[in-house]
Length: 399
Image 1 (cartoon, helix red, strand yellow):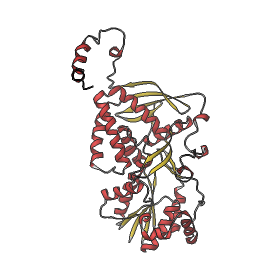
Image 2 (image 1 turned 45 degrees about the horizontal axis):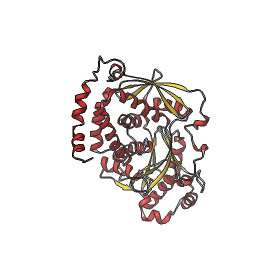
Image 3 (image 1 turned 180 degrees about the horizontal axis):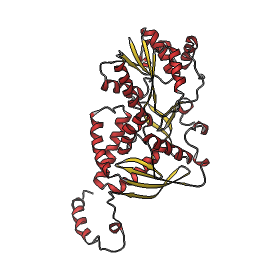
């Protein structure tokens, strides 16, 4: 049997690699995705081989991650309960490449280390089912044999020691981290109690607003058809543009959130996230939407953004509805070409200027001065017709 395992080099997937090889007498191919998390990939590769992998794939997916997923979510303005979907967006990219490797290697199965409590199990497995329904899916955390051997973290640490698996972990891990180019998420451990404030030393991408510079910084972002192309007049590759905005935003304490979200499986979970660059881009993109979209487009966009965010969060990236919604968002983002200038100051994003090639904002119409472009008297007949149902309900004592 040949299994392709989504591998990170951490305790869980290292133990799973050894366990799967032993349990199924299988050949294990480890696959590691580079999504901008700045890991030592050579060290991870060496560890996987020492743990028993026959082969290790290290795949640089940063460009695909940003251009095929992050920018699409940005064009939709999608969130899930105020969360910008940093982890949710990454999983289908990882799982898609894992499937490609499994097909290339003529593997029998794919495996992941997500638990039965979280959302990631769904995101991985729905991608497998969509792209390679013939592959067997192995999810150890939902396997009776695995659960009988590993009751918790201590059991995994003891197993790793017994198998000579190198580990860099203590039994008292304060929280779990999941970084990529978009964000870092923190959950579990001490964060599980919502009465516990997070430790300021936890953050890697952002400074606290209190410690941010006392001098604000201006940043200009240019968009073409909804996609960011330049920062401060300089064109950058997609992932470098996002990385630069992470640095600029992080310096000013932009993009921290602390929320209790509703997982797909029905559990509430507290998550703390730092998402500096994408927070800036969402803000800037929306400023251009305000100029270019009329009431009908903007209203529909707001409604469909919720559904789009749910599809991403619920693991349905490879679903016909997501493709259909992309057609809508691609169409309306043809109008999102322009530039936005922002001021960043101690956790705040302040708009300074915005200009859009397809702006339908007309200061002559909105001005309180003069009536040349807008005759106030036209509103008399409009309000009479618009208010007619309300007037009738009032006459019938229905209100």
